[in-house]
Image 1 (spheres, rainbow, N blue to C red):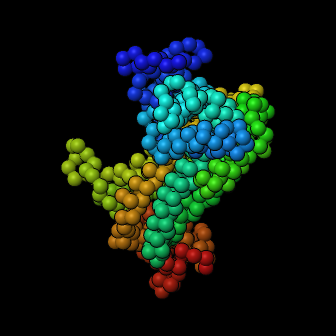
Image 2 (cartoon, rainbow, N blue to C red):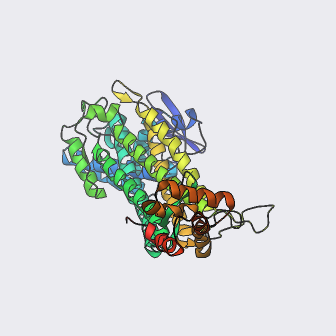
Image 3 (cartoon, rainbow, N blue to C red):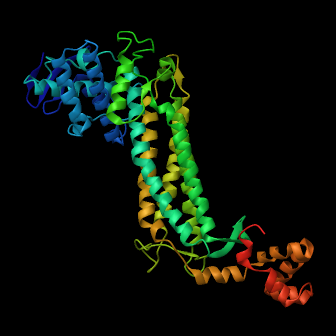
Length: 469
């Protein structure tokens, strides 16, 4: 039964009547959640992936139920049409719920059921809230429980955001840096260990290390993904599949694979799929590893660029905006700083996911929304930050060759080239004499009489110290 009262309409659920905003498609259970959880100011912070995943699941579930004879074809067609609008982003305003709600995500699942049912009713020419000809539970949620639909949505949204959004952004940054590594492959510079001068290497070798870190991080993400392809759908409330056709889960997974182009399959053990979220924890850990790599890269870049007069100043970065409200002309490495802050945020998000993932009790982990939100937040932030760093910093990095040469020529650690010729003790004596008396290595070596000028010039060649000899 539905009735309009001013700008609201009355809808019913198991607890009784609820006033729902008349202009919206959600129903009683969504409205209760909207009122009962005023926690945080935002909906799912990365709502589009979650809403899209809900639409995909409900569409494929309706098609599976029709295939199995559980829904009439006309009922399934109405659900599919409404669900497609959810997938396409036409009904995003109808999903108002926040992350911090029931730990199973029941209200978010019912939000999707109610919106799709009411939109289907509209398409059929009916009255919102009438629950005819499409009912949110009996039709849209047919063969499902929140306990298997929400974990399925978690995996659908994560697969999309990680593989289709994050990975391309990281690959683009990786390719930018790889091109820089090639371009600067012959530019010899001072190496540094313990923040102290060390033996030489090339700038290309430095950047190749960053590229390798990103390659390893991408491989770690690839290895983490297979568990995400396993879907909980078909397990219903506790993993037994009560009240659903035994073929339902497999058919939904097959249809989702067809819709997305990703290798989704039924989870081999539905009890684990509902009560634990180890696959999400594994992906989060891979994102944390990527964040660590990006943090290292960003910090290296800003240290190499520190200055411009009183620091290393071996790299020049694009000047994107003024850096100080009080110091005229100051330019800061802002893209590096933004990327490092994102990395720190991801470390915290991963800690939340790890803890939440450990809290499965009996047949259900009731921390699903916070796990999903933190994984999606990490993936999106890393993608955005990597893309911004690539476009506004990495592509514009240029070496200050004069500064690099100046540091290289004054480096005391070039003395390492003399080890094979005069031994460690004499080489150390040369370096310490040069340091204490403010001499060049060449001057110190000749003063000590350990080698001739020609020997020094032949043996101390920085370019020959960048590879095995």
